[in-house]
Length: 112
Image (cartoon, rainbow, N blue to C red):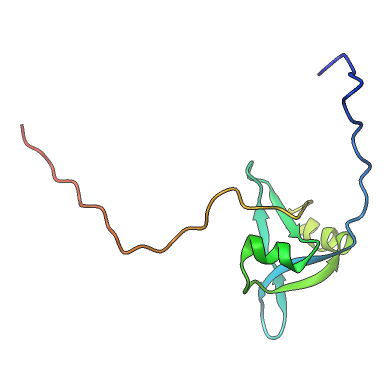
């Protein structure tokens, strides 16, 4: 904990509602949809929402289905599932995995 406050240090911003979010979903039973949950780098479950469809497509791909929900409704729906954290406009930190047909050679046992 820092005991000194520096003049150039900004104060934390007040939390404000994010408004309607584009929330990624996957197909559910029948005509329904299921909210996709993710994990933070520390392993905590989180619900994810995007402020615009362009950001959603840039992060999860063009074909990602989504629904529009308010932040409060998203929190209410995902809280009982163990995702009390809401992440708004996340970006991926790793490149997308590419399919490959290359298989490394199997190691052979050496005899001495």
